[in-house]
Image (cartoon, rainbow, N blue to C red; front, side, top):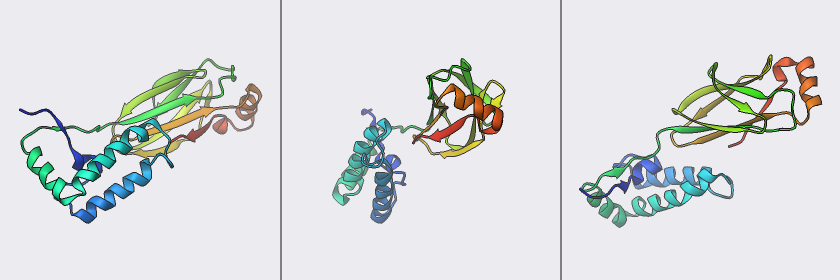
Amino acid sequence: MGHPEKNFYAILGVSPDATPKEITKAYRKLAMQFHPDVNPSEEAKELMPLLNEAYSVVGDAEQRRKYDARKSETRLAPIPTKSRLVVQRVGASVGVTRKMDVLLDGEVIGSLPMGGSIRFLIEPGQYTLQFKLDMTTSKVQRFTCQAGMTVGFASGAASPMEYLFRSVADPNNALFVHKIM
């Protein structure tokens, strides 16, 4: 049995019987999402060369024919099926509370210390995210993620006074959230 080979069709999100036009369309869509000029994340740095390699093989008729013949003799390496959720607690100067709970779809999935960061592997799908700090809960944040995608959120306040003011004036908005794709 041969060594695992990259599944270029899965990387591009197309079926093995996709037309050249469908392959090009899928590549362009992903390239616009993960190009380093528009997405400076670590995931984009890792994924863009893989997308280029996949397109250079299955986007070229002769290379694709050779690849299809070769892959029938080898195992294809799986691609990531889970998504990553990264949550950061910024504004470490806010010393009002020591920990902040992270709620995913209403359930606590972890706690963050001041200035901390946590990562979770989640199934692709639609989710809601909230942060609970003492007696205050942030507004519900809704997000959707695909396989292999990283979704990031940051929560915090610029100062203890800002947190205290928000807690008294509008408890539902005491924590503010930024999506950090």
